[in-house]
Length: 336
Image: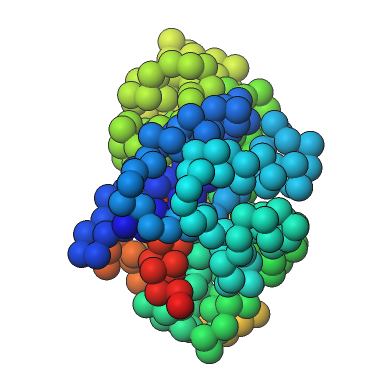
């Protein structure tokens, strides 16, 4: 068996890949407060039949660490302690598998490397001319693949500068990040920038995700049902459901959702125009949201609709939700 592990800031995803089958584990594990318990978590998935382990990560960015170097080293030490007698290989942004020792030396190459594994998997198995768009709980990756070459920049900073990384996700993005006003009772109304409500709330209210898929902590620590999501949205107008009706909350949620779609569409169009690509491979928790964003925006370069390819439709929901861990396991099995 090969183990594929994706250690993210908010979620750790593990794929157990056997010859003819696989099993995926999706664990909400906020590394900014649980990084010292990572070894304990990973030990649960150690077994005698593991032959090799492939790893990608983004958790080195959490504020439990003062630098990426410190984060990478701590995560790799946890992996070595959890799997002391196993072969561990860390996938880097150049598409290579590195030993733990080499990964520590080349820490910038393995930092924020999970999108690379997904991109190589897409290039080899789905399309070598496409834009990979992956929306998770926190971020959206927009990765151009042109003529069998991954054209993305290698660091998060460079990708932020070039429309290839957008800090908007299906769950954890504060609504105040999407915009600072809404239309309420025919009035352009300022909103609070307090941490009152996040995209998980509006996506549950608008049936874009289920309450069960809302796996992160809520801003107020409350439940994830529609009523409580509405209570949190009302708070961004410094209000409550006694002052604002549920119908008005739905309207406000729709306004924020449109802002979300516009931001994704803007960045997608920029990448499409730069690399002359119209095939879009979508994956992640936000597949349905991405579909709305793509259908909502005009392909400015070709003036034709984008061609959407869904990883969920090809491989199933579980793979789409945990694609980096699945991809790194597949790539490691194919690696000679």
